[in-house]
Length: 367
Ligand SMILES: [Fe+2]
Image (tube, rainbow, N blue to C red; front, side, top):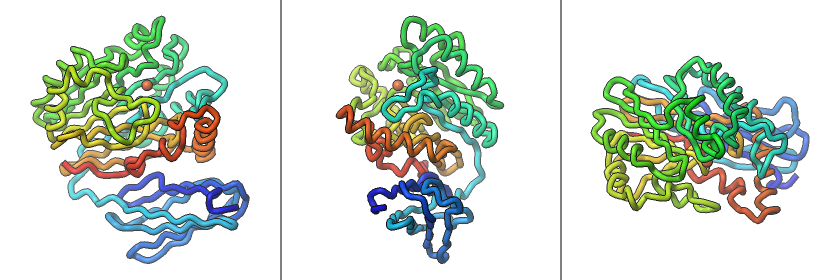
């Protein structure tokens, strides 16, 4: 196996744990040597099937790690830095879900899981019930075709959540003939605001049409003087980012109409905007931003296949990427996306692009 055939990447990082994925076409032992200021640690694969994950526990916070992976005839070197340890207690945590695209299709498409979409959402519910966040926040495209059957399946799976779900619709959820009405029937109001206590507020925008609505703009205007933290959910991005430029930029089409409001929002401190749709995991500081960061979330059903855990402390928000459970599925999505990019001539499915350039969002947003 050549070095090019042996794939490895850092998946999850927090203040004490690093998860690394690997994938190669040859059976044999894979090893990971992790070197930090504290010394080195060597992990070995047990089953030698060439695909899997290593988990480094008990890491030191705020520390550089050099990771050296070896496989038969190949090696990879990666680096990462653990997150700093929070200085204050955790105040809130949310689990962030984007674009699960629950579908009854039996064929997958361009690296996207349809056949496994419901299974992945069930797994997410199980994860959420274990992690016990304050709520699950979803930025839309729960369904793929917005049909009654998809909505009913989605609702049944999400009814097993032991905690609240706050969700806004995506463009797939409102597909005709009945998507818009079905969203209301199964998930209630497509736009909302909730007081979270301690002066914090969450605003859900319905940008499923690709536009910021007048009512959504009113909610945002009203939220500008929220005394505490402001969390905004939107399917489409409100601000462009240079990291999302293939296929579509995923931004609402009427930014010019609301330029002044979006500028005011960008200057508001303690603001987190979570978006989906393009699902390239990137964090964006809008032009002139003094406060807000826009987090575009990964999705479970397409590479890099995962969710985001957000832990809120007084000094900032700790974000950690949580991959879906199966590395085999994740790697199928990665390689199928690369093959689709070549076959269809659509470079937006290339894994190197879909991974984004923000370390899968494993980072702290300091206030
Ligand atoms: Fe979408």
